[in-house]
Amino acid sequence: MGILFRTSAIIVLASLIAACDSGGSGSSSSDSSPCDGFDCKALVANIADNIIVPATAEFKTEADALKTAVDSYCADPDANLIAPAQTAWSEAMAAFQALELMQVGPLADKSNALRDTIYSWPAVNSCGVDQDVIEAENAGYDITQRTVDRKGLDALEYLLHTDTLGHSCPTGVDAVDGWNTRTDGERRTARCGYLTLAAADIAEQANALQSAWQGSDSFANELKQAGSDSSRYGSTLEAVNALSDALFYFEKKTKDLKLGGPTGIKPIAGCTADQACEEALESPYSETSLDHIRNNAVTLQTLYLGNKAGEADEIGFDDFLENAGGTNVSQTLAQDIAAVITAVDNIPDNTLKEAINNNMATAREVHAQSKKVTDELKRDFLEVIGLSIPAAAAGDGD
Figure 1 (cartoon, helix red, strand yellow):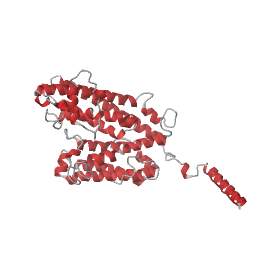
Figure 2 (cartoon, one colour):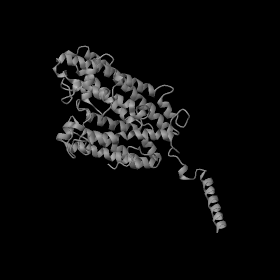
Figure 3 (spheres, rainbow, N blue to C red):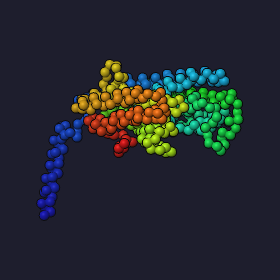
Figure 4 (cartoon, rainbow, N blue to C red):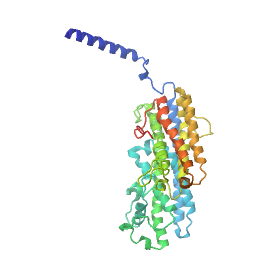
């Protein structure tokens, strides 16, 4: 019996070895790569060089302009010529909203540390900002050492767009005692002391981001050199997957938080399901949350197509799908991303706040169209190309 068992085991082992040998020629589907027959390197290069690098340069330009506008306003805050600074903030925020879907490498490293330093939403703390306005009057104050919810673009939005000079802290917060008894001029001056530091810090972070993406040792080159010893990515496919992962910001943040929260589809704590929730609005002081959603959708479209709509066709994820036999998926996803932008444009109100209070159906239509896109991203997009789903999006059936 023992001899028969050993003989059978030897036969099985020999069969396995033969099977492995025959598979080594590339005939096994498990040995094939989604990049076989498709220029994944060209896809990575196009997105890195022609989309992300210019986006970081655009943000640096707008961040520098924001610093200049804040400095100009704060040279004489009592003149109350704040509008140019508000406009500069909107333009810097628009540039950064595009980068929100490009959180790979520098913006994603160290648990998104650089991203959160520039813009920490949904972690915001207006009371903390009010406290830091007072703290900034003290010698030795260092904004770089403050928590992310006390600085960045969200902090500037609050101070540049709030319609009151009073603090936002609840009663009993000792750190702001006496603030509301100061004169208007004293409070504007104090806020400007903080604003100039915060705007300068944003400009510094924007410069760091741009520098990280440019130059011979840049992250752009690391992406393009995937598979070499100089890259964190073991293959070009891994680099493609990292870029694909970044697209899922549109699901977790744009769909679920920016749309799902205010419309009550995914209510936050303190809000009632299926009811308007103003507390969940992004950028509530400037009331630009609808602009951010549209910006995110347009950026998703650009990354997917490999070029801005209407511009010369470049290699993108749509081409990757078509090469893998997913022409129908490619076309459907392109149409559905465009439908999100159209749904935003069809909202008759100027702001998302007005829409959720007066035309909820139009706001929920944007969410519905966005869900079509994210469902396709999680299912057909990844399946056809053969990429893996980000851990944060796995198992989310919404």
